[in-house]
Amino acid sequence: MTSNPVLDAIFSRRSVREFEERAVDPHLIRKVIEAGMWAPSGLNNQPWRFAVVTSPEMITRFEPLTRYSRVIRSARVLIPVFVDSEAMYHEVKDHQAMGACILNMLLAVHSLGLGAVWLGEILKSESEIRELLGLGNNLNLMAVIALGWPVEKERRSSRKSLEDLVVYKDCKI
Image 1: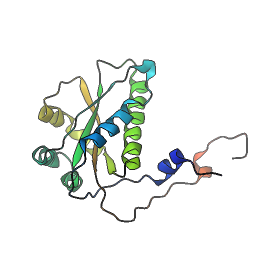
Image 2: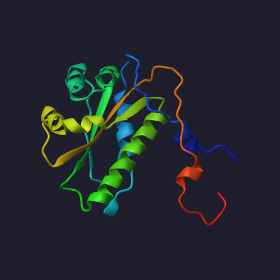
Image 3: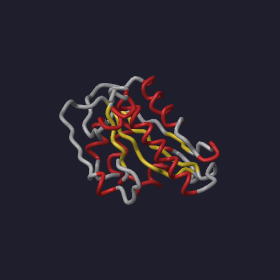
């Protein structure tokens, strides 16, 4: 089978939690957000909203909001990703769209040579983050993506077997 760049990216992407101390070009940040914007959404309602945090002073203010403060401290960019409740039309479908949006962003990060991690534990600090950024209650935090240039090291991952996860099949796969 020939190489497939999309599958290669899916199978090689890893969460990165340590970043170099060099800045990320705003053009690359824009590409990451644009990738998120191109995720599918029901009725094409595009309920996602993004904040971009790059100043060290503001990044520092996120540190006490999660037990993963070392990841926040190391990141050069934070992208809080929100769903706009005023743009939603179906809770489940819109939350599925948000997952697609975030995954598109993570794959874009990887394709650009950057590294990132999807922070979910920080959701417990949603109201503090909205207040910190001066945002309204219509924006519900879905994740914070911490990103930057990855510290080079081997990253491994594993998955359960296909046989453990496929619950029905009527063909040999």
